[in-house]
Length: 247
Image (cartoon, rainbow, N blue to C red; front, side):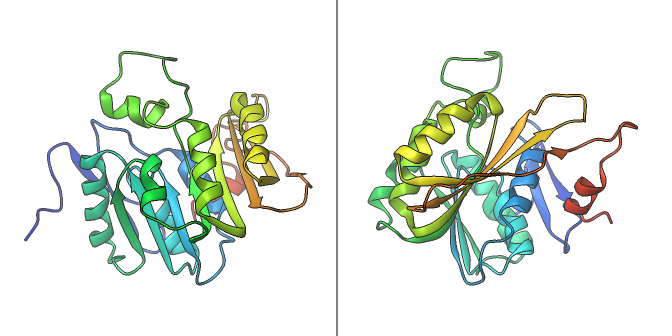
């Protein structure tokens, strides 16, 4: 029987419907951005086939399996060791029939799937452009944080190819890339429909953005009320506690 944990790995309880995830303490562990994206995308329709571009540990698909009635979600992960770890998370949660990992570069997906295959696509892509930011990171963290294997444009272009007409696209990213994101989405016919800014507290500028787009939709952008993570006492706000299923 396969060992469930390997060196430097741990099992984290997601405290939601009994779901758990395996993470490597030496690698890139998921953050609140993935949790917020899974909540932002929880409106994915029943019976949907979903694609997660750059799934990492598989946190977004695991949570979406709990939050939605999707039929199947496929997580694309370029790092072999990370993909293998995510596969063990699938078995740990008995999600084999709903969640599948593909160890592949997103640039190759056109050779694997036909156009307009997926009802929805989600992604928490690398935030930093190639050759920017801190350099003293492990290779795993660099791949997770920097556009070393695929660019923001690649993520949006493959979405145009594989998303069905009127299908939904959900992304979490950084505010400083907002102009790039919206211009690329429109260029590739993913019309921006909902934008939400996320701030750590009321006195801080937004440090995350959540964006929803619809393929081949008419122009109309709704900017939702900012999501605040911490209150003045340094505790999670009521909205964040609800997302974490604490209240």
